Length: 179
Length: 227
Image (cartoon, rainbow over all chains, first blue to last red; front, side, top):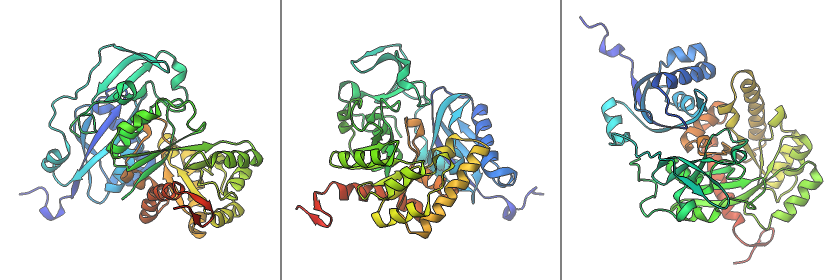
């Protein structure tokens, strides 16, 4: 005998998202932050009606399960993520679909690993200098020598692009990471 | 669908260069951004690098921070010809009122700062002078607990007033880095949580493009355009 009648099965949606963070968080840390925001914004009742579950997370891309009639609430919760475990973070929703298979096919890039680079190279410009922390596509995160440059912006690094340094790359038009 | 993020702060006020903000905004689905530092485009870090990012309009504006209405009026008169987008950093009642009474101002940003509700007189002036009211939604992301509750209450009252007097509304994240940016759909969802209707939120994201288009034309006097 079935434990649940098919007509009583809850309808779900799967949200694919991209996490941009200064430090790669664990899945548990991410869910602690999401649940904290959900409880704060929606209350106990709203949380009970929209049980969020992390289906997949690789450090950057993830899939979150939510109720089919609470998509707007889920968007708000993900948009309200400000920092995870003390490091600045932002979650950008890539898309929403009805099955895990379709959300994977449509919105998750077929990259096993992000094209990240961390080699301790330096940038020396007239206006700014410091160590390169992270390079992905044409995006560059820089730890400035002069820490007063990041004062008041809540972040640890300066966000630059290759356009700032040497006029850009031909293939760096926003699609180089497969998004 | 011409969505613009209307109040970004780039290096040296924020931590990101203009090109990084433009790059991420384009990826999130914006058609353009307006970088409005408090100091205008003086001291900006490599503004020309943003020209390398294709398919996104990068406009330079200014967000005026003034300590008195007289200084505000002087600043607006001086800077109007140089910038295609003039925003005023509100918060105090006299500054809110002076900004709303000046037709050269495009938008009054965060009038609710310091739990200050927009006054009726200022709102009526904003209606007559076509000054938009900009709601910075970053406190919804940044604050937690009671401060956020207070902010939500204040912004709800401002939205009710703006709706009653049919004022133009803009929404923004006031981003200082790419971590502060949110996609148009996420921003609309946040605005709905704050009290805006879905149609109002969508219109609020489209308004900066229309204002920029008007300001970029050459006006000789009100209603007279040089073609």
